[in-house]
Amino acid sequence: MIEIVEVGPRDGLQNERTPIPLPVKLRLIHHLVEAGLNEIEATSFVSPKWVPQLADAAELWPELPTGPSFSALVPNARGLETALSLGVNRIALFTAASDEFTQKNINQSVEESLESFAQLANCFREAQPNGWIRGYVSTAFECPYAGRIDPHRVVEVANRLVKEVRVDEISFGDTIGAASPSEVKKLIHHLVNDFAGDLSKVAWHFHDTRGTAIANVAAVLESGYFHRLDSSAGGLGGCPYAPGAGGNLATEDLVYFLNREGLECPVDPDRLAQASLEILDLLGRPPASRAQQATLALCARAESR
Image 1 (cartoon, rainbow, N blue to C red):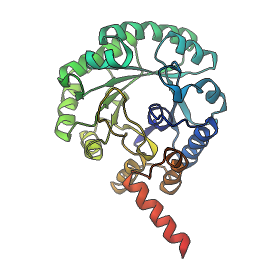
Image 2 (cartoon, helix red, strand yellow; image 1 turned 90 degrees about the vertical axis):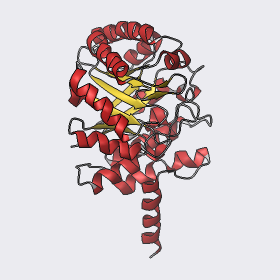
Image 3 (cartoon, rainbow, N blue to C red; image 1 turned 180 degrees about the vertical axis):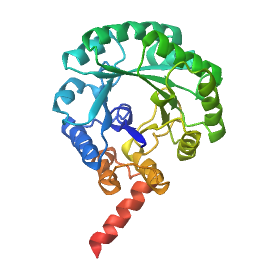
């Protein structure tokens, strides 16, 4: 079965300038759960100075519904302290394959980020022995500052996350949505031959800036090694440190593709299409996901009969 990690509440909202009230965020999450999504990255325990949109993380976390697996991005020791005080037992750490990108994003080199994350991971494991850690490797194909990334470098960073930080899962990110299927297959080839971790614990995080996200998903699934994919309801999201980066792969488009391919994906397309509408309305933009647009049109036609 294909597993979808819904990142809309965190990655989809973190860079939006229009403030989204806490009750609206919670309604989004409830709608996503009702649609059948059971693994959701809910927020980030980051400084409000840098990400004002997620300043309510400590208020949001206790209000999350029971049942699904929720995780949160933790960028530093202060964020980890807050997360642990709330009982968070699934966290994500964020590095990249490009020093230029990590310097812009977290003001550290890749080396420095790996060292600090190893310390954070140790603290987390002491407090949550049965906890779970995801490691993000952004700019896995191209960096907006350094250009194309050598797959050897990507695997090198991933291996250090496995060996030194001891992450449970790695998510490879096409941060600016530049990759093509052939580049995805090339990275897969290097992973199959040189990755020190468990390939079944690898996830893929595609942006749809240039309309290649679904084609890249197809390349991942054709390999037969992977079954975990990140996506964002309504295609929300982008990267402030990546000029020109568009939204994440829309969960609606991913679910439609998986269903048409005959792959098991227990998500209700109708409920999913409705889930992000309140957020989109607040942001003043129409749905960008083509599958979402089509589903909403079909629902409207059915109601008018």
